[in-house]
Image (tube, rainbow, N blue to C red):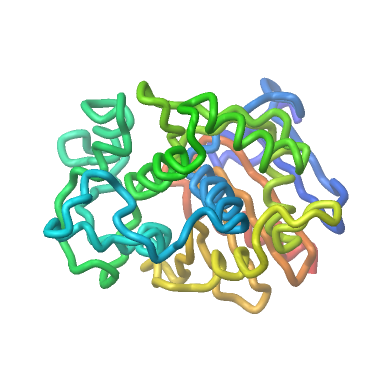
Length: 302
């Protein structure tokens, strides 16, 4: 389309719908095309979940193992007992303010753009406990970056090793060839926020989860990994739920989604055999309109 078709959403850049393994609808803004890489923002958290799943598949990670971070190596440190599962469910108990506006209070902004930018995982892991581990849900980009650094430690080889692992084990097998992860100065993939890819390739990722982690007969993710991700573990305060690095609608369609800042979405709808990707720039005041628009899009496939 040559102009923004829905001003209520602010700026839309790309839309792809896949049903039955085929693209059935696709639209781009005037400045965007099918080959344009766009930023994931927090949809990258769900891709981090997939990277961890590969290591679980190969028996290289025990989700109940501790400590996950070297900052908690001392058994007397109260954070020592934080497990991979606690981090996956955003129930680590660590202090973290996910505000995207107030730089005076936001740990997220300080981590990505301030004193924590060179070592995002260390910044997050050094935060104190505010709650007993496993008791309180607190959405935190910091916890995902702790996971990402720990994945890199298991994989080995620094930045090059992590990038090679992502390509060999996840991106290339599903044809996600445009995927471009971004790293901090220490070589940690900023798995909370920074992966660039085309809308079609984000749809490929959603399709991997729609098909229970299997691609063209090859099991990429371990059996049960997708079900674990989309199992509601915590109310999100807005009528939905959070699972493990995925948002869960809790509806009759079994819908779950990877959500990112300013309206990035990878929506997976098992009952309709559907994946919907929407990328753009919709500030928070446009969130209700975006949610209503996505509901209308999904309902149109009933």
